[in-house]
Length: 249
Image (tube, rainbow, N blue to C red):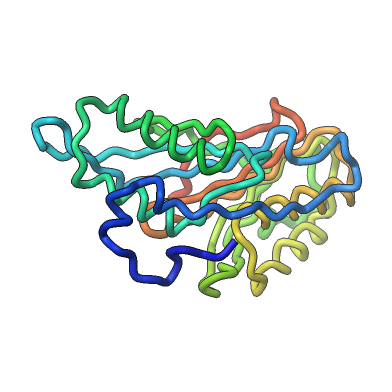
């Protein structure tokens, strides 16, 4: 699909039609050779929008944080700049209740993604998991079922070529070679990929290399334009993480 808004001036008339702003992207897939362990089983993309504002029926402004969850099994997701423009377009719109605002956003996103998208007000974040650094680790292999993290993960935006930074969390039921993990994470530093595909690739690479019964890979990417995108891919529900924040987010 061609990009409608990325890097282009946007007519104010189009901004008034909220859902028309949203720019769909057909997801790229990184397939694992192990079909029963494929990441789409428990995959989600968590978007945190920190700068969402709207007007109530008295024309008083409200500023809230939104949590948007898009299932990774959707064939379509949203281009991030169009999401920012879409959410920003609410700042001068009146709603009689917050519930109507949430419903409007949920319906628009679900229609574009062709799947049920969850939207809610985020009042607090979970605590970060206790984790072990991969970068500063002198051991040869990881311990099964423990949470490991790779700080200062870097990839490039495939559209703007600007760097995207993240902390990557990995929890696996089997032991993995730490040197191999670090080398693989470092290989993304000059690669242009969307956040979601980075995590898809990491998940599938680990599945293909180690065949763990349980695995979760979670990318906490730093925000841009008031939104951070945090893809999570898992083949076991009990290995999934909550929505928490990194210090830099």
